[in-house]
Length: 508
Image (cartoon, rainbow, N blue to C red):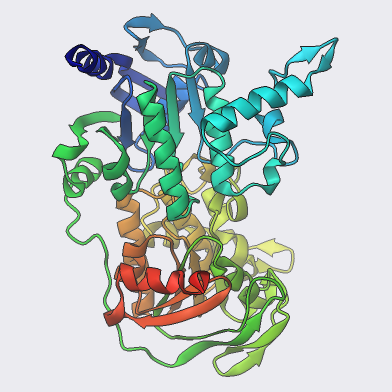
């Protein structure tokens, strides 16, 4: 028994991957100045840093998307050169990106073996491919069939297909970039069980996440990088969130959540008996000037669907909407904007940003009527508005002509918020405003929300992070299965009470 234990201990202490003194520059930007990372066999090693710290660049070098300028990489003590994605796969490295790259209309097995299909007599051998996929699915106890269409699976199931696809390359090193950003608590637990299985099989996992509570649950060590430089590595059990945040931002965040709770003023928005003929039924709530109204619930409860109806993106089949006491009909986003409603959507990359356009273009896109007179554009006014929001929202960008796709996630989110603030909204809807955003940018977004509420803007905030909901909301509407199951005042808020209401109808 002692010999077996010693063998397991030796395996866990084996250095699987070393990235030493990595440097990488782009025109006008030194993305990585000096970063090192070491991953042991069977270890979950978290990589932590603010957006723009260099995490993505480091991972893209490991995955073969970028080549390093200086430094070296070793696997099991042997120096390797990674010039492209094929080199990375050859060395047993797979990267699961935050944005899944599966093909929705193809089957599970077709996605797993895409580009590597088994061939018989010059034709794809679907029987062999499905058989191999079935073995992989069974090894993870997944209730998914090889011929299921990817588009019919849940996000969590698609995530697991990505994991299986990566491991089908016989990967020894697996990178997971924000893997839980779109998962429910139940789905997160399932993913973590899978990660623990991979650990037992000796797979080394690099885990990128901004969710501190997750790191405590799943990681063994945490490496922090800041401004393209290595700051330090900590044993997870021997550090704290406060210490890690200080390492990330270079200072102690004394006020992480910033909120001055105000007495609600006059009613701005009233929703009564709203339904969409599908999921939503009898949705009723009020929103007051200067209030932050939180919406909580499990994934799929219908929170985002409500906001899409209010904003004119989805049709309403029943119910009424009142703005400042007057009934309104909203059938398009343009009508919603005219009534003073703004929506920062859940996915900034898919639904909000134009990544190959400038910061100026993205901020002023919805307020162009302010600058256009006939066929002429008032360039000076357009520049003034852009600079106003870049300054007031502390958007970090070299110039306002910088492509927004080159900014960090937190700064991209602030650009989207700036776009809607430029429309002078009465009601600002923020759907997952800090998803994929680092702690420093989160703190800044909370301050922005607090300032807007103090100025009288009525804010609706959808969030899957309960600490965020509890600390930032005046009241919280809790949803379950397309209905509002309860409304809690700030004094009544707790994670337990919210979860009771979020599962209320599901238990009936």
